[in-house]
Image 1: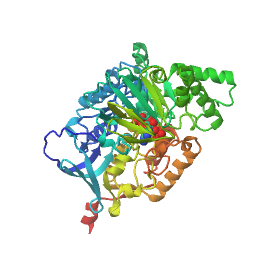
Image 2: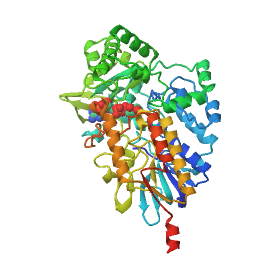
Image 3: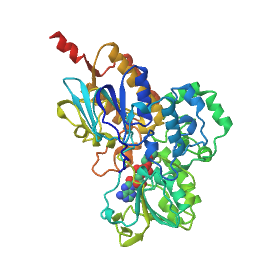
Image 4: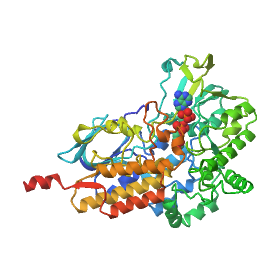
Length: 551
Ligand code: NA7
C-alpha cells in the first residue's frame, strides 16, 4: 500500500456543491467543468499529486498503449496545441508531466487535497447531501459526489503464504517507488505476464543479473513500433484536431484504428495473412481492427490468434519457451491485448527464464525467494505484476452508504449494477466516471472520461435550472441497462476468457462482464438521447428546503 508523506494541513470542513474523489484525468477535468458552471468543488486523492494511474504506475517501461496524439484532452484547443509529445507512445513520466502541465494551466491544485484517502461517503436522505470523510479528519457536506476513482487503481497483491518472511525487496507494479529501483546485478522474480509485466520485463532484464518470470496465463502481445514522434505526424494531428477528435468520439473504442470492415474468415487465406502482416508491421492494439468479426466469430478469431502464435514461435528461439508463451486457451483480444517493445525477444537472452505456474501454482513466498512445487527459486527482489481489483475495487473498498443505510459493496456483491455506468440506484447524486456498465476500459480512457464529465456537467446544469436537488436511476432502468450490457457482451467472445473484465482475477469476485462493449460512439448516442428525453430512466426530486418551506 502507498505510504503517504502526510504534509501538514488543516482539515477541510463545510459545504460544497460537489465532492470529487480522485485527481486523475477524470477528477481533473470534472473540477474544471464544475468551476465553469460556477459550482464549488473539492477533490481528494491519496497520491501527493495529480495523474491517477500515471502517478502510481511508475514501473520500468510503463507506457500508454494508446497513441500519444490520441491520448490527451480534447476540450481545450490551447492545451492540445501547446503540448508536445516526444514519442509515438508516451511513457509514464511524460504522461505525468502532461497531467501536471494541465493542472498548472488550469490552476487545479488549489481545490485539491492530496495524501488524503476518502474513508466513507454517506448519503443523507433528508438533506439530499453526501457527507464525505477522509483519513485526514476532513468532513465535508456535498450535494453531489463524483467518483473519479479510476478503473485500475486498487492494486491486487495475491495472498501468498510467507509473503512477509521474504528477506529481499518486494514491489508491485502499481505502487512503484518514486525514486526508481536499480536491479543491477540482482536476481529478480517477476510474477504475472499481463500488460504491466510485458512492459517491465524487457527493461528489468536489461539491468538484472537474472530474471525469472512466473507465468500463469500467457498473453497475446503486439509490437508497439514505438519511436520518437515525427514532427510531420504530430502536425498532421494538430492541424486537423477538431475533425479527428470528432471521429474518435464516434469510433468503436474511441481510437482511430483504421478498421477493416471485412470478415476474417470470409477473406482468402493469403489475403488475410497479408492484412495481419501489415497490422503486425504497423504495430499496436489496432491489430484487433484488422477484420470486423475478430471479437464475435470464433473461427475468425482463431486465424488472428494463430498468426500471433506463429510470430511468437518465430521470435523465441527455445521451442519449449515459445510453446509456453503462445496462448491457446482463450480467444485473442478477450483478455486485454498487450503492446510491447521486445517482449518476446527478451526470452532469447541468457539471463531470462520462464516458469509455468498454471498447473503447479506458486505455493509460498520463502525468506529467500519463492517455491513452486518442490523447487525453490532464490531472489534478491520480487516484482508483483499481479494486476488490480478492476473497475469496482476502488469503489467497493470505500465506505459508500446510500439510501436505507445500504452499502455499495453489499449492493454489488453479485456484480456491479449501474444505469449507463454513470449512476447506481439507491445512491442518489453519486456519479461515477467510466464506471462499470460504460465502455470504460475497452476504450481510449480520455475520450470516455471527457464524455462522462461532459454528460455529468450537462446533467448538473439541467438540475440546477429546474431547482432539482436529487437524481437517481429508476431500478427498472438500471435493470434494463444491466440486461442490455450482458446481452451485448454475450454476442462477443469476451465472456469466454477468465479476464479481469470478468472479475476472474480476484478470488471470490462474481464473474460478470463489467464494461459495455456496444461501442463508444453508440454508447455516446444512447447517453445523449436519454438526456434529450429529460433524463429518461432517472428519478428526480425537488429541493428539500422548498418542501420544508411549503409545509
Ligand atoms: P493484469 O493484466 O491483470 O495481469 C496480472 C498478471 O498477474 C496476470 O498475468 C495474472 O495471471 C498474474 N497473476 C495474478 N495473480 C497471480 C498468482 N497468484 N500467481 C501467478 N500469476 C498471477 O494486470 P496488469 O497490471 O498487467 O495490467 C492491467 C491493465 O493495466 C492492462 O490491461 C492495461 O489496461 C493497463 P492470470 O492472467 O490471472 O492467470
